[in-house]
Length: 398
Figure 1 (tube, helix red, strand yellow):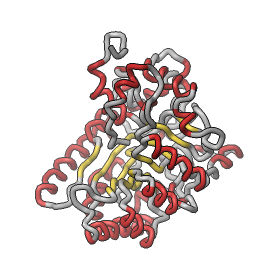
Figure 2 (cartoon, one colour):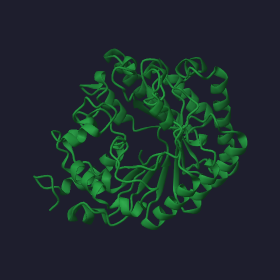
Figure 3 (spheres, helix red, strand yellow):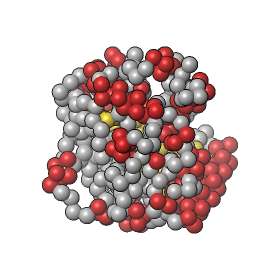
Figure 4 (cartoon, helix red, strand yellow):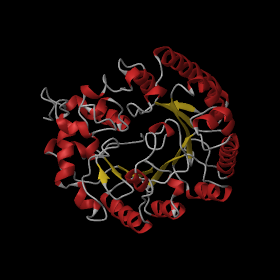
């Protein structure tokens, strides 16, 4: 998740300790855990995970009430939060009151980012999305062709893929009619691809789709592995090299296209993706070994995740660490509560030997969970680029 602008007042917070003087810049809401897809690569619903336990089935049906979402959005606005991200373990558009949620977020002057499989959206919803000027939509396709889409989504068909493409083209038309398609497109459409060994040969086809649908960007990310379950989908070294070559090749193709086309398309976070899949332990599904260990983690001052059961997590991979629950306590109290401050301290120190970090990520066998995959890495990079040079030799601010 990007588009983060660290506030200057944050430096004072970092120097002072582990309290935050303002609210998070970005909050992710997992408004529902319900989902109608069973993507092969999913950490939550892949058929490769096997039969779900009773507890997991119960968890997969959790969702936040509109009333608690509205209350928390109003609270966040007063705390200075600027951006919300609707994503998580479920499909946001599976929430029965999703359009009310979007209206409420915009009424609270929030920038709204959504991660969606795009299967629930119809033309009427698309029209309101454009009218509301939703800021950014990550469309998770996972494939460049209908045939591969159906293989990766066992409970979907090729017809679903074609419906999604038609709706994306329709949104491009609506944006153009409203004059919302150039410079600062609303919504910004980002075609989002987890890359693994069942779709890695379709990088060029993925770019073809971006051009055909007049998307604004394309994003590639490596597979988030569930050990012993989905690691069979990992790229081999040869496949990773092929992907790197194709991504660079298609980036040059887009550069040439952008010279003559008014709607520009870019591969976002390209260098970071290439670095991650080329890391020494990428074949094991560990992408951050050369990045994470060399800098502090600042994310506890600027980000929070609210899960479908109301639990608040301090980062995207800390789903086993709850710092409070919005049904029991206001977000304001949770944000500077003792559990959140402990996370800020632990994350900033980033001691790899600290057993606290065994709770990060999906794999309890990894002692320092951050090295497998960090979903807040872009925010952290931007903050470290701004503040890292001010750190003393002991990793503290002067």
